[in-house]
Image (cartoon, rainbow, N blue to C red; front, side, top):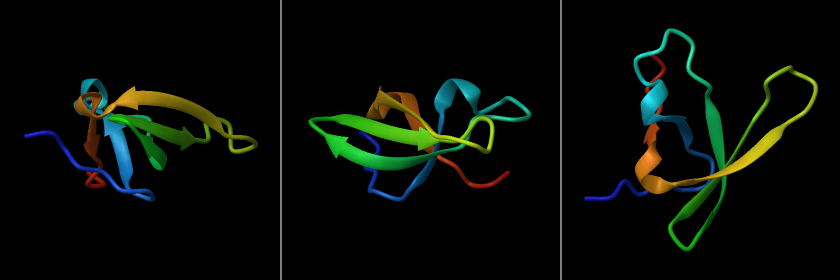
Length: 62
């Protein structure tokens, strides 16, 4: 079953799940099965990118 996300969810890429420091992103928008995420890589600005829901998983903080 496909993961259901909502705006404000904290997510990471499934491919980053085993990395020591995954990029932690916030769901900003959801449109037609695509999830738009934002994150700050330098603490000064935000990056935005669209992912398929299958590529993401909720981040549990571990």
